[in-house]
Length: 210
Image (cartoon, rainbow, N blue to C red; front, side, top):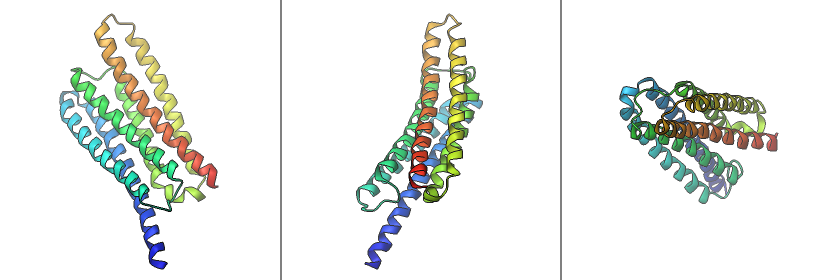
């Protein structure tokens, strides 16, 4: 019986460790995306790095789901862990898509507001990583809600920047460029929405257990 309990505890720790590693991948990807916009002449190099991180994140996400499938007792509700993992992986997928669009659309210079939006997204993802790293304390730490609120505030800032950027975009007459850049703006805005999704799940967990 003691050995079985030891295995359960070990498995719980493994799930949260993999989940935190996934969040760290998201954080690293966001930093690479900011660097891409700072160094547009090397966009293809950064796109390759981001693609590699995205593949590594996919492996981690699969590992989380595999661990959940073979674990009877999970550190948090199984559905909550699945949602956190899936939404965090989505954030990375969207960032990889943004980098891919930059190179495939042959964007030579950072679109207006894009660097600032990318920096704000990186800040939101830092908060996501903090939240996920503290999930082991989530049942006793209401202060995590402050980080959830901060992500919400950042998401609102990104929405404002997105609306301003798209508004200015439609003041131009280059239809092809409008289509390309609007696609990129929408992808990064959606990535911030997925960060808020993670925050919402974790806030629900905090309120559920405290």
